[in-house]
Length: 387
Image 1 (cartoon, one colour):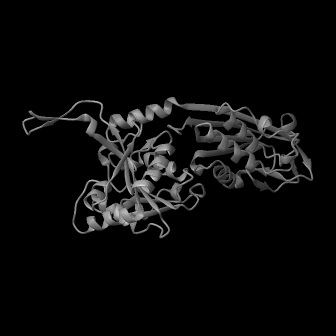
Image 2 (image 1 turned 60 degrees about the horizontal axis):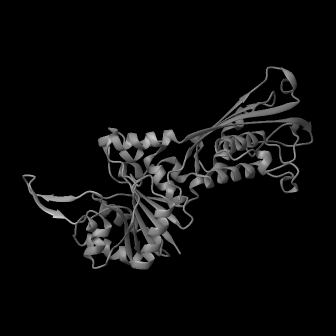
Image 3 (image 1 turned 45 degrees about the horizontal axis):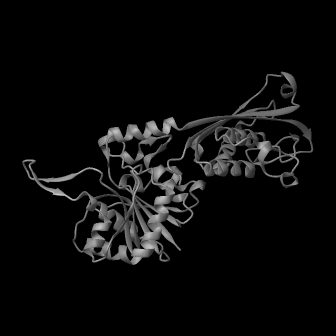
């Protein structure tokens, strides 16, 4: 099955951020928009993501959309005057193989994998579906003077969220109706008016839309409270006849690190830091040097697996900071390549990876050029409702 997610992010949304569009404001080290896009990129049933941006951003989208971690699955289109125009522009770019299209508000960054899965299933079963939450309070209709004219049965009232999910043909009918002149607040309303029944599936109270300053602060507070920090350390002797590998990058040197794997101290320290922050043990527990499977293995793969384990345990990597202690050679010319290698391995953008080179000023084995060491610190936060 081919599933396309359209992320509606073309609004200016400047009430919250002044000169900054709301969807680009930061929560937990990433923009609101990146949280939303990442939720669909990580989902194993979503084939592609189309992000609708304002004209001022569509020509030069954020770098993370085109990074290696996005895997080439993100496309950008320019939005229109209204939401329905923006979604219509994106619909024109949907892959011809597509079976189901999801439409999601960029400012709902806490959508869960479960909501996405249930939306896809409901669209396949019913043609059109939205996630929504039932109201808990009594609902009153009032007139212009705020006098109650009617009490509505609350069991029949739901608050719509996103994603909204459609079989491709159903959304095609909705888009065509909108282009014919019918105005609507969302695609589900257009689908209704096009004659398609729209099914409601239970939403999630945590799937909030960030609209006000209070919403933004609450989101930031929740993510700050979920922070976890881990440290990592690794040291290897330097010997002739071995390559010197740092962050998956081969460093020109007559000496290399001695170890069971490729002895990449950068990846080993970063791996331990991630595992430590997630309370998952250490590198020796998961990749012991007694296991022939890891003989001469690329430590980038160990790091990648540690990031996957952390994600499966419900954590996302906020940033990594690594210090390499090496007397010679100087690694400054290679730092950007090393940073990118780490970023690609753990699935984050390179701006969240720091690597620094230090010497030991001639002191002890490292100072004498007999060894290399690395220290790492990882910041993780708990994924919001990962199931």
